[in-house]
Length: 324
Image (cartoon, rainbow, N blue to C red; front, side, top):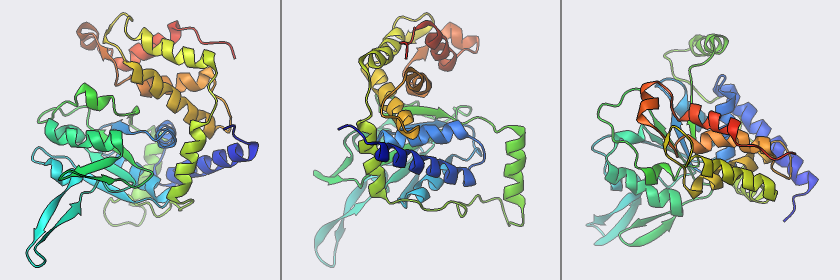
């Protein structure tokens, strides 16, 4: 289905307005906001990495408010059980029947805070949720509301008492987003906003306006799926993913989901720009967040301080892009 000019311009206006509204609560971090919106359009999940206090929770709450979506939060801890995530059945003595108590995953946006602090069994409870969009409780499947998106956070510094995410779980995330420290001017603006006549340091989303309904998001996702991808551009995304399997310094390359994630995210960037087609530049913008968690740097490079980001950027310079 070819997208009309009206559909493209309307989609672009809505996404730009959502970005601006989120920016009313989240100071700076423009690239991060765009990447999260791109993942939402692509109906994908996001792994957010950053030290505490950079606004990860605020970002998710602000995004949920822009489309009047429901918001759920799970604080992952070592004693968290899978049923604490998905839900469970309980026996009601009064009625003599079992009833289902749904877990916090039954929401539009689920914030899985510090996901790497829970053991593998609990992390795995999210696998069906993220991949199938449903939860099975006592053999009965329950469909999750649409749109549904998991935004998981992890602290890259503190590793004590953490359980590294298995490769199968990492691969379920469409993008891995890194939140860095704000620039000086942004930190000044943030400090002013938090301390101006307020008690405590709670960051609120009062300045964020609700623009659309959840059904509009599912419509935008359908538009994004119909953005055209030329064969040469598609081949470029595949060549980038395949190059990771033979690139010097990469111990483990990306699987087929790498190229798929690049194309899905690139479509999101195109729709945000109001274009009916994906350009090589869209692919380049999508490559870093789509590949950084799907490759592993060789140990000798990690010792030198060169991680996956530097390898993906070097790879982008070596793989020729098609001419527009």
